[in-house]
Length: 313
Image (cartoon, rainbow, N blue to C red; front, side):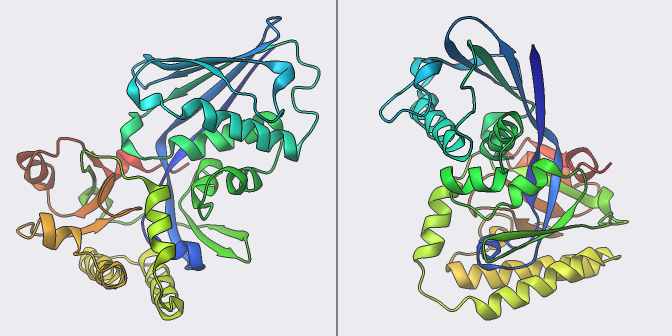
């Protein structure tokens, strides 16, 4: 028997960092995601293969299926590149968390081949971990948020994007996710672009640094929540630009880090907003038809129009 599961990638348009403390945040699922395919075998092993968007296998490992969930058990990985260090342990951690949530998972299996395929480059930061967590949760039929919080640190908005096919407002209240799909379809969307900064930011490290900061986030949470609401209802580019600039200034002050526009793109004629962990992954640029050329001339060659990045069904 073969099974296939799919999860959407994600981008957080508002509420970065503060989503962890209950800020109402606007998130969008992406047209890119990850596929997980499971094929039953008689190997008595869980064979694991991970593939890049170009079809190249970058990780391969195997584990005695009877040992899944047993302390101290590890995959026997075949490393494909230096970037796979620690991948095997992370997968084992996820599987052990699944077994805790559902002890019968794979109990009677004679073996299986698991193949994971990203539809975006691994460095893009669109949710290689969250799409994997959600796919495994679908496979095992367990709560994806519980699985996330047993294995990774985060708000869970990325899991919401993995499971929803429209933009959404996300809020975390007492460890309980509140999700509302919204009709966010800005009339100026053809003037919005996502620009990859040529480096992947470690979101776990960024979250840790944020949580170590000693400050009262209450007023910032309220201000960012209001910006999220206003952006959903925004119908003009000038108003949108002003809102994302206000958001940037709030988070910049909180983190004591310059905004991405002031530090990298001060001569850009439009507005620029960091997305997710500041300093890497994608930014959102709002500008005219010359926006892609501006960023490519500065060496940022991955410029994706809003209409090609954001999933909306």
